[in-house]
Length: 606
Image (cartoon, rainbow, N blue to C red; front, side):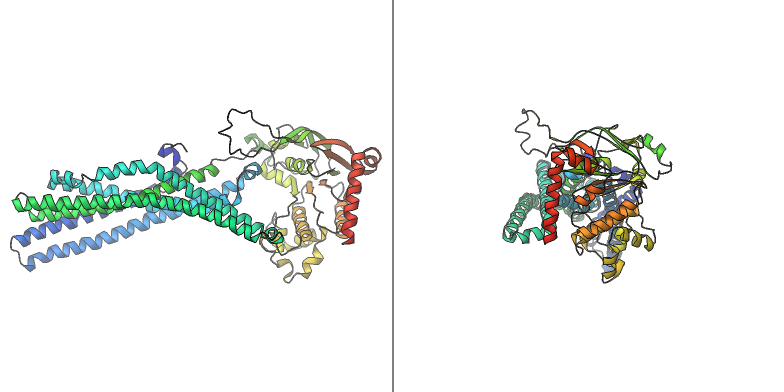
């Protein structure tokens, strides 16, 4: 990855720095005070040594001892205050970044999540933000402490003896040169560790989500081996990072030791020659110790800073992302308009292609012509009247679900391709659109909450009576009464304690709570038995004319009830009409209908 200017890379942190600038400034002043108090101890040692050398008794030495004790206590208090201030700000920034990161994930739409792994996103929101907190808290403190130590101590050393100062610090440029050389490599290794941790997190998330499939196919051993391989890759990344850090740390220690040896040799010779007092020698040694301490920590500082920069880069990939579907600001003028009781949908020349997966060999094939992904939808034209019950039928992969997602603005489309009551879909504000239509997707996701909380998710302040009403409309109320805690029963993560049919009906009931003029249903009966399906369809048909219903139909009974059925094949609408007309003129529809009847007959025999 090409190096970028430091300020460019931390630009996302600048608002947080500005928000807490006075806390950072106060913490920095406290660190300056700790450096000043620390520098006072060698000076008092110098005075005490000179007084002792002049023959002073114990009474005269007591003020020096008391002064050093007082400075030590003051130094400790100031350092504790500085750490509490700066570490506290680091925690506040961590909280704010985590909150903004989560808010950004809620803002992004389906195309973003199609190319990202859930486990890696979780790793960025946990592990990387923790590294960011170390960068903002302990990292800032140690860098500031080192800067203040040199700023306060170095002039005092130069004032005592410039030549001895230069000789004592002679090895230190080697440390700085090595640090500069190692910085980029340390960043690359830190980024590799973070990326590998994200890979492992994604693998673990997939393992947990697919645990039942793994067991069903007796692939536990293979999955454990894959986990071991991922863990080994992460371990090797950590090991390579530790090796580099391990090479640098002894070099810093050696440089400090060489500086101390030079002071003993050269300074001792000066004292013996009478050109340097013992007091100055003691003070100089104390000042050198104050410089060695932050210098020795340079290796840790570099690690924290480079790990923090790697974390910033990974988090920025999310914070820099924007929704693919972004309504224009002018859409806000519609937000206060009353909602219609029912709404018409118009689709004109709609085309859609899913983005192709990233090519890992793209660099090697940069001269090759790009491959356009196949279109999932081609020239779709529909007019759905307000209050109509419309079915979408077709083989698997014909584009039915994609069309519903485009209608729900979960996938991008051209500005004038879809309109609701004459208003372009992209001109409708998000909040209004979600009140105007609601969709039940194929995968019925439930939260790890009670049945009531899941049903009333779109209307959290609603009364329990509403939950029971929509549960009855979804033919789910009788089963809820049989749960151990009734409507307050917990459904487990992703609704794991419920059957597939129960999850589908819970998701349908959740959609009905919104009482939206448009209801989009994506194969909501696939796990429901025929009797329950009949009950639900009766309830939906009672609302005929009251709301517009567009349903992906994979069951014969639903096909029979639709006012009009649009038959899809290879992303196109190849025929439209009521069930009876399609049976009379479309061989494709008859074949599909026969297949569905056979599937339902087999299900009835189970």
